[in-house]
Length: 311
Image 1 (tube, rainbow, N blue to C red):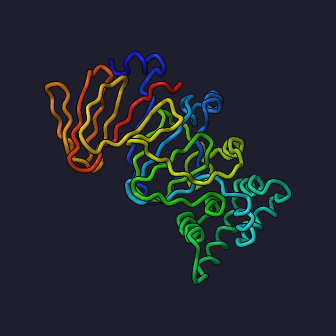
Image 2: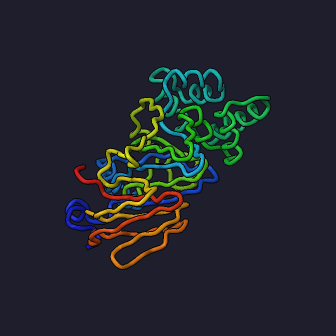
Image 3: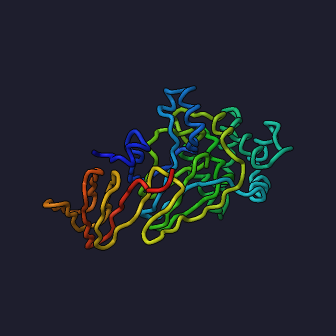
């Protein structure tokens, strides 16, 4: 009754999760596995990878959000090697620098011994703090070095991944195998129902550097904002679709749905029942509900459904 026949036939349980994040310090440098890798990781290490499902995710900024996302183009990484001598030394000390510049630089940083990373981070932080003016990437590296004073490979990732700022309302889709790290801001996040995270840096949690390095494509991935179409954010995912409700609308569920109001006020009417919508309101709509209506007076309500026609 909760999933309905369509979703129940395709998935054995609710296929998506919804979160509201308030990020005040950098989250880990991480990737989420695709479907094939998720099955392999769960078989190999179920304690670290507790399910066999992929974890694509959609993030919508509620405030200004900063994140690192996708590998920079080769020319930008080469420029970073020139401008950041500590990064060059890590590559040289590890015997890297003769092959693909993206692959070599990422591997050199993530495979460097702890003592070498500690020294490089300390030198980088000291040198950058002495500069009168710093780029956004340099300032972020200083902040990360202060957050991880014992050293962490992630301190160098502002020079390896794109530094992205999302304005309120902007959205980004993070596909499997795409490196990223949220840095600051408030965001609405919808993701496939999985807890599979491959971490490599900026964390005290379990790190799996070998797996993360093996899953990267080493292709540069510039940021592209995910645009709305009539209030809907369309992704390749079969697990979820997100839309924003800003006025009055009526719906006939074909599967389970979740409604979430961050700053909205209004009401939901389902049969003879009326629910007041206030900031922080959330509701689960089972597939058995024949129809319901939403009337948003102020703000907006996020509606998450399982899309039809995507397998």
